[in-house]
Image (cartoon, rainbow, N blue to C red; front, side, top):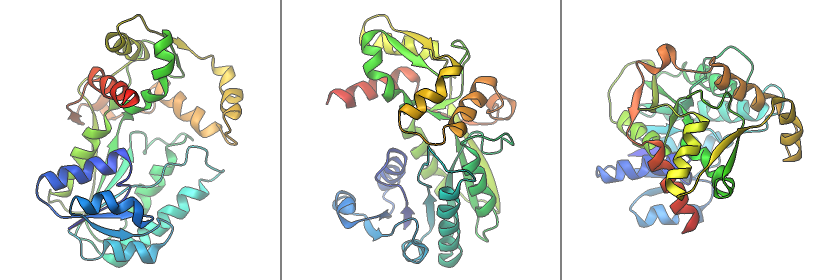
Length: 288
């Protein structure tokens, strides 16, 4: 039995589907019973647990061969990452009590970056879970290709706005299905202690390349346009953010290259999905 947190999201669902396709038992960890109904229909055990409730989490993780641990994203964190720290404390306490055979935790490229930025929260998670007694893998995934879903409407008009700059700089990306498949494979591996596994697609993607992928899928010209750095804070605050600095620092890190895998991903595992396929899937989902 493998316990999967975040199963109602894209990555957690992909982990669960991969395990089920291998005829392995899955326990769906959800916040309320209704969200687990679809997974129960597929033969999954269902455990009800909020990630802030370490007692319920421990019960959900107990007796399992492995746990896929995923922290809820906090895109507008308060100073010091108080929200993430609370989730991390609850998750670690639950894992320490339940003692699953192994843990695969979804982390991120840049979790090891010392510069202040949004991804520091995952670095805090790694620090905390690394002290657990069971084997732990930190799956450091690249920038999700699915972030391009926010650009579909703009691409239809021929211009996508890019915060990543310069426009011709390729950055490491990955499709969430590939993240899920990789996490499911890792849960079935054997290892000792803690380790880091990096994951990106075979080809890196620049904002210009993203625009070209939209163009090929939509059948008309699409170009990327850089959003001036001095406008970011006002834009993000207008979108409702109270603490935009960590997000801005993260984007700066990707653009400047200090958020990257060592040796530009030479030792990273490679996903099978390219940007054209990812964009085609996003457009199909949007229209269905």
